[in-house]
Image 1 (tube, rainbow, N blue to C red):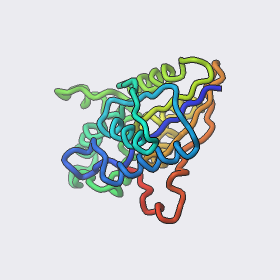
Image 2 (image 1 turned 30 degrees about the horizontal axis):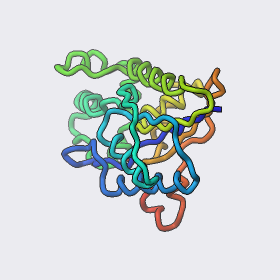
Image 3 (image 1 turned 90 degrees about the vertical axis):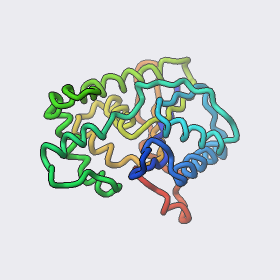
Image 4 (image 1 turned 45 degrees about the vertical axis):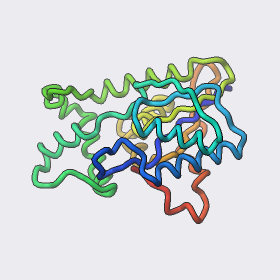
Length: 229
């Protein structure tokens, strides 16, 4: 069986000028994950990373924990969707009196309703009219599935590491399990930073073997470090 280890990036910098970078805790989470992999004597035949700063930094942290460096394939199809334009238009239409979220609690408090509107296509016309076009939900699905299928199209029996984001990871699980769009939203609400979701492939199909695993964080002195943003 081939294996895919799909890792979400470490904690990013919500509320900072540049969200797309790891916080100091995010770097630590990534290093802990690498140390866990090294303790299990895991190595990877191929490494694929999304083309976002927080993805690449997370891979660097994992490599530091493993005591090695990687030469990854960069695949933009595994990038997170651009949530800010979607959220901004949703807020302008449905809750103009409320400031945009700046904290993790505020972000997740609005995530379900924003995603539901985006999935339903309610914001497509406004998104298309912007100077910098934002993809639709269908387009996001299609590119992520294409990236996942490309990741598994390697040699039989190899072990692949993907470092990406919560949205693509949710769509990978949705694709493999044949779940609904609504289920994808619920998955997004659960995925923790640097969690590992593991898929197995027999050459014909992918199957889900583990979801949202945090073995490197499951100890009393690290419980405070389990994050979602």
